[in-house]
Amino acid sequence: MSHPEEKTSHTPTDSFNDAKYNELESKGVVTHVLTEDAPLDNYVSSDDAKKMARIMRKMDWRVLPIASLLYLFSFLDRSAIGNARVAGMEEELKLTPSEYNACVSVFFGLYCLLEVPSNLLLKKYGAKIYLPIIVVLWGLIMAFTGLVKNFEGLLALRILLGGFEAGLFPGITYHLTNLYPRKEIQFRIGVFFSAATIAGAFGGLLAYGLSFVEIGGYNRWPWIFFVEGTLTVFVGVWSYFILFSSIPEAKFLTKDEQDFMQNAIIYDSTAIPMDDSYRWEYVRAGLLDWKPWLSIISYICCITPLYSIALTLPTILKVSLKYDAVHAQLMTVPIYIVAAFMVVVFAFFSDRFQNRSGFLIGGCVISAIGWGIGHAYPNNGKVRYGAMFLSSFSYAAFPSVVALLTQNIGGKTKRSVCIAIQVGVGGLAGIISSNIFLKRWAPAYMTSYLLNILFNCGAIFAAGIYWALLYLANQRKKRQIDSGAAAQISPEVLATMGDHSPYFVYKY
Image 1 (cartoon, rainbow, N blue to C red):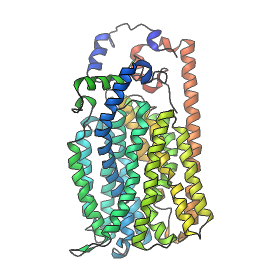
Image 2 (cartoon, one colour):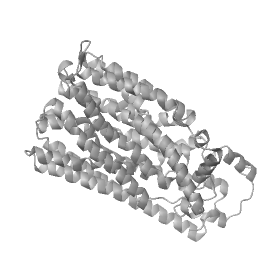
Image 3 (cartoon, rainbow, N blue to C red):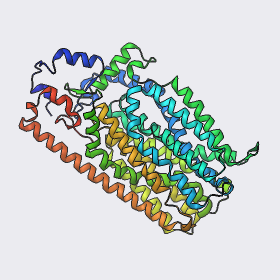
Image 4 (cartoon, rainbow, N blue to C red):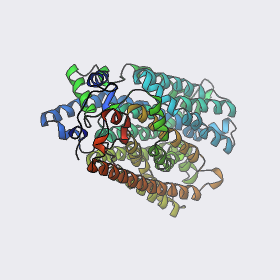
């Protein structure tokens, strides 16, 4: 594929000249249009490739542990209500089944509404400032949840918890896309998302231990909120000293390493600059782009079975498989350990083969088989428990949904909006999944299992449509280049086109 600089001369103009371009680039306002045919390996020497690998390892050790830890507590805190229910919260607060479901579902109200403004705030203030603030705030809310005495109090705090947690997942995802080349992004998303599955295992172990705590008039379930909330506040404060907002702020890298990494991200592309300044037209472009809206179908259909596991697995094990409350918490752990391992495996090979759609579809197929086995053997507890290991492959499939979008959106402002749309509207899946395992369908939950099979099929279908549309879009761009039409587009126009540039090749 030819590149634009091969067909156009860079003639300075009043609106976009060399001096202006150099000024913007030096300030980090512009990046460069990404192309599928210009991966890092194609424009660096073998020594540079080794240097890049060494720098990314240093960044991984600094970025991924804290990102994973923050997301672990995010997922741990939102799903703790399921562990608290098994530990006696529902009985003590005298919640009806519909009131409990309302408390689970209402979390996703502000969670969905605040994603876009949250990511715009993150872009303005930076990850180092913004992320620790929201983590500390939701940690405090989590701790106060242990003090509630009735349905109304629990409902109010769940609403606030969702509001402050709204910024973390889209925020970290957006932050990672600014630190790593797009061909390397899914493994990093997969590693930090694996914290969600580890949260399930850790939450089960923690709830098991706290099920025996009876101190100060608070017995069992309040201590799940007290302990997890306190730990979240501590981690939020600590994260301020670890996080950095951009590569130039990465003090653990030398100046040479900072410059090298920054250039590698900028030149993960052609030489045509992409305007990364904050402009409302880029916000509007993100809101009107078809890609985040179509990806929401895959997002919801993939994450609904995932949330079904995260929010209701202890209940499934207790009601359907007849485990007592304490052992139901403990038996969730092996399922989450396997799921966490497969998340990383899928993400690694997805980056290795540069294939997102295949691993998304594969994970959903395996998950559907797991729910199908459970549906076919409603009276066999051992088979149903084993089938949950297959059902948990939704976790392995999910990072591909996010990577498919992030790598196909050009421009930082537009990308921050599109990620927030996907995660925000996709968060409605939490409302769906919290109302799938209804008490009236117990103990076999036949309808619940069937619905999760159908959701997995929906994710597979939507991923196929998404792949086809990206393929057709690439063919249109190729025709523009081959016909010479792309060469007639001026550099200043290309700078504002983002992923609509004919030289931006979609990857799937």
